[in-house]
Each structure stands twice: as C-alpha cells, then as structure tokens.
Length: 131
Image 1 (tube, one colour):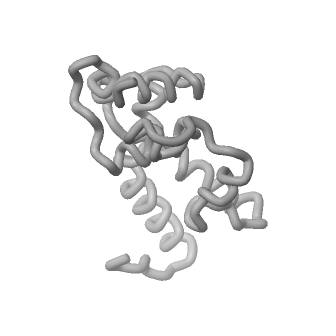
Image 2 (cartoon, rainbow, N blue to C red):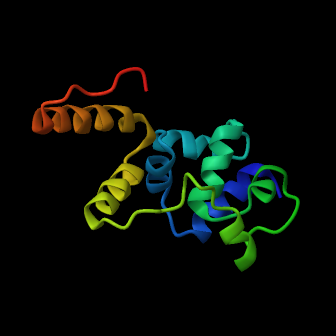
C-alpha cells in the first residue's frame, strides 16, 4: 500500500472529508487531495504527524506502512503527550482550550493575540511579550 493510499484510508476510517482533515491539519483541501493522489506529493513529516493524530492512526504505519494502522488501547493513552492532555478543572478554561484546539493552525497565533488583548483590557495589565 502506498503512502497516498494509507492517508486516504486513515481519513476515511476517521470519517473525515478532505476539507475537514485539511482544516484540522491547517492546510488547504487541495493539499489533502494532492497527498491522496496516486502520483501526488507526500506531506512533510510534521504534517504526517498531524495526520496521524487527527485520524487516530499510528504514525509509523501512516508514514512507512510498518506496524498496525490503529493504536491499541494501551498505546492510545501512552501516545498522548502532556501538551495534548487536558489538565484543567475550570469549565471556562476547558472551553477556551477546546476552542483553541479546534482552530486551524494558521489561525491560532491571531486568536491568542486577541485573547491577550482582551485580557489586558479587562485587567489593566499589559500582555506578555516575546512568548
């Protein structure tokens, strides 16, 4: 099976359209179409990693064809990095984190800047710089 076929299979298995997968990864739908085309360009390793996370398949299988397609139950929990875990108790903070994660990658920095500006207006403190 080619990498293009594995990408298509992973997308279909996760129930996502090309447009939905593109939005989740932060690329145009045409990029996903190219990645799935028989003679199409392959995604970068960074995009392969994002594709694996979004579709819930093992990175090694998606990128190389080795191993199993799906994560086992044990591997699912072990594969979640601390940065991806939801470690919040406040329901409002949880809403904010979920909204951020649902935002396409290219829109995240402007979103954070808007939130920082709003927070500085409400608190009277200037927002942090250089972070």
